[in-house]
Image (cartoon, rainbow, N blue to C red; front, side):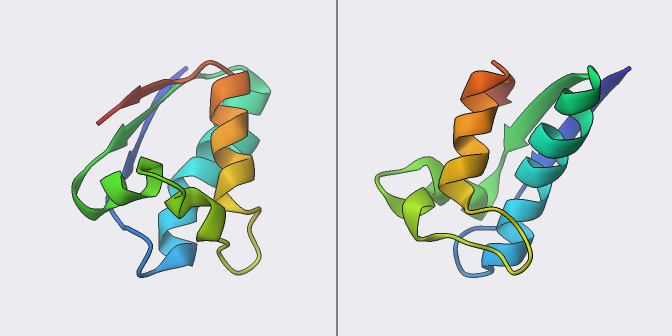
Length: 79
């Protein structure tokens, strides 16, 4: 199955910013789906500088950990 997640929320709402990445790496990619992420709008700030290290959504892994899993799974990310 092919799955495309769209992230559009930035650091102003840490939980909403983390959800697409969490679903992608801890859900779809883990069970073998062909997974891709589109980063749009305010979500682009997540991958700029050290912003990811400051984001930790409630009940979700820290954004830095999620992005590390994106790299480990070699997911395609479009900005």
